[in-house]
Length: 366
Image (cartoon, rainbow, N blue to C red; front, side):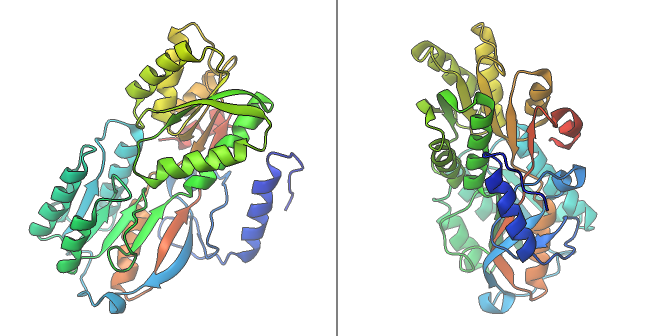
């Protein structure tokens, strides 16, 4: 395999080579591959890779025998899905739809799939999960709002011997005791890759504003840590401001409006999701700035609107965070019910978009 000599891309290429040497590849539902390597390389795959994420399993497994839970049939079981945030952004819309689509693909009756939305309220998510359990849910898929705070819901599920698969955000509760597995991205690596792109598009010099995600979850913590650690390798770049936009477009726009006033020397923006990045672009344009050119913009997610902005020249790079968890979540539940070992973590691969490929790959976005 060819390894790039470009100083900013060499690390990821070397990791990919190492993982390719370690991986044993098997078919897994509609997913591209399963890599027993414990870490996820960046992907430059086409539509198949983005439509159904590849995944790498890590950590000790959990089995039906270990938990002592009763065996149930997915085709006839009542399954609950708890969404954490309102579905007014592409990530949450796609995430929820992937759960519904996979249930339908497996022949699970629509009446057997219970869905709730916590509307970004932790207490409501706890109540939602307990309500689904009261309605007879025998299996649960949960997109946690925060890494901490859902213990009462997990306790309720455990009391009824209902297995829980978590997706997107990792919880601090003990695996195989309170939940079976976490399925999601390597958020630290996403932050590092975003920093690599920031270094590339800025030439390694400039003043960066960071739009942080919502507090209390590992996504924000990890994407921030990965970005800052990697950005520190470019001595000419510095973070001069950081403020939360709570993963929301309108909040990202209002925060950017404030930062333009308080830090007029900003030359780059790192947004920890596309919605905040798009809000930042709107604020910059309203202020007469030239995002994508005078002020570089890099974010994480892979939404259609953000990728299209790269094509249009108002954005510079997007690191994908694939929300299509349906296949992997149901596969984990099926494996568990079949007596197989379910890994503690399933880390998916993520693509990325920049000026060299956005026009060709915009169809992969969500």
